[in-house]
Length: 122
Image 1 (cartoon, rainbow, N blue to C red):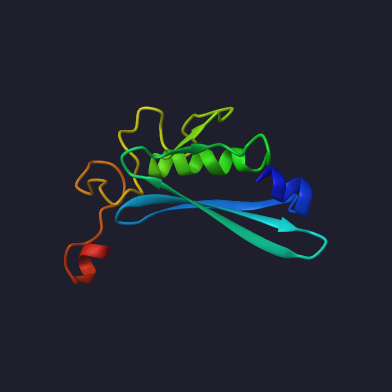
Image 2: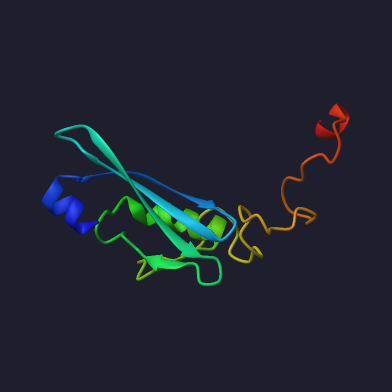
C-alpha cells in the first residue's frame, strides 16, 4: 500500500469493506490516484481460523475508522492498529454481527421474519 501511495500516486483513501466467503474473510481497500482519477481496489483474503492482517492506518489515515468497523462487524484483527476499539457496537457486545455464523436468535438487534408473512415484517 505504501508503494501504491508513494510510487504510483494513489494518495487518496476512498473506503474499505469486509466480506465473508465459505473459507475466508476478505478485506477490500479502495485508493484513488487524483491525477488520473483511477480507483484501485486491493483485496486481502484472511483465513477464518486466524482472521488477522496488517493495518494500513499509518499509510492512509482514513483507513483507521474503516478498519475498526471491519473488526467490529466481522472480527478481522488489524495488527498494529492505533486504536483497536469497537466503533459501532457496545464494548461488551458478544460476537461480530456480520459473520455468517452470528446467531440470529439473540435478544439484540434485528431478526428477520421466518415466513413470507408481511405481518411478521412489520
